[in-house]
Image (cartoon, rainbow, N blue to C red; front, side, top):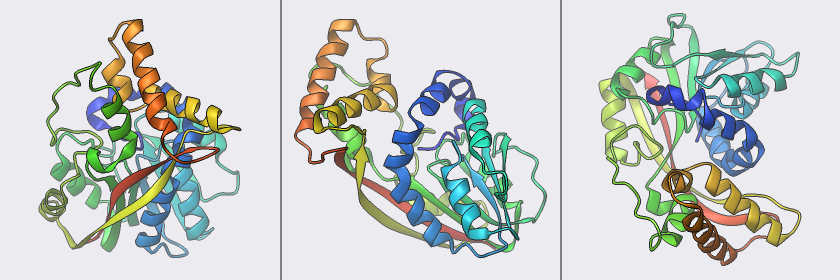
Length: 284
């Protein structure tokens, strides 16, 4: 759930970028385990030069920089000026990391200079994913590595399933193309394999990763549930489903989502299930 959405640039320079900055700490808490799993699969080595695609506010860039060390370097790339500004402001002065506002699908890269292309939920939004991955592959050294996390299906991810099920009697969600650019465009394992192979990658490996997500945060259980409702209402499919609804429907929806989250375990956060693919490949 990073912000790399080349087909939605206008969103990430506006309200969506603002919302991600506002809720950055909650979202990074939610996504941390997935980023850690993808970093572990990436086999980062001291001295690696890394491109972090859809870096958001920089959490994964900083984690990668800690592993590559002073002999390496991480360039975090995102299309949201708000998130790039936050990442740049939070970067330690001595960290081997920099940030760049750019569309990874078309940006001018130094050819064959990177050891690793990495992304935490930032590669599912390209209008032409084969062309985008082929373009990014040009930045990799021969034998260079690719590692990323992408979501599996909405039905396997409670941050979508729970709130959208809660409001199904109140709001009819719009019909969407499952292959269109968006969070779940890479839910189909076979599609990922086809895209990466067509883009020139080899040794493609795709492994499921399931974990419990801390969703929202609060000093008490009640505050955590309220915060989870706020987060769902601000970022993700629930926010889009309710965007044009009247106040009374929005209030009823919030009550329904609150009741659903209240049935989940957790004290300082609502604990829900999350499901992703961890994908690795090499530059052929």
